[in-house]
Length: 216
Image (cartoon, rainbow, N blue to C red; front, side, top):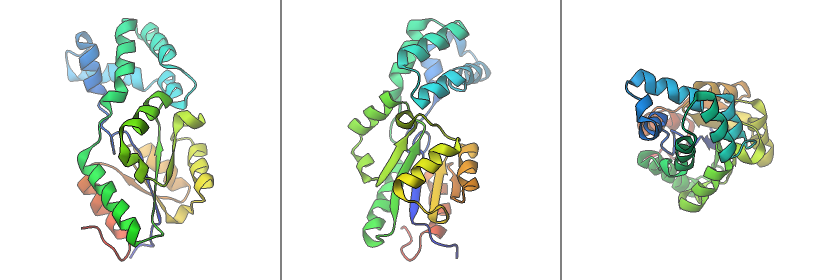
């Protein structure tokens, strides 16, 4: 039996909320999405660049990241701005993941040591929309959006900040993220880690860490 986990920390994008950059590119720049390879290349150029990371970090505004990205890639700036502004609505709850989160919330009532947190690379404009639209965010005991603290995953400082803010013991903390680098950074701090692939896969890997009250 693995030692118990008391703190379960969720990423948001592609774990609890949809994140489909290829769909965004096809919708707003269909002329650049003639093939899957071209779609992927432009998505990586937009969302994998330091400018986007600085938007996540909260040091670039919607207008600034749109202007810089459009200029860098030779894209129509109003279309790029429309893409960036659409993302908050594009982030939709993943039903099966939210259902699993609800089970953990209910389990917490029977297992008082269990706590639920989030650690998400999320620009502040999107974070505020999610907080306003989705009541299930109130199920968390706390969390950090990158844009609010000017740090992003996988920088060690944002993990350390979550630890200090909520007095988390690393050996009793488990982190769930779809990106291997983000999970690896958590594990380097002594946290447990699960790379998310699906709600069913997460359920199966999470169960051994939850003692006495296995999820149905």
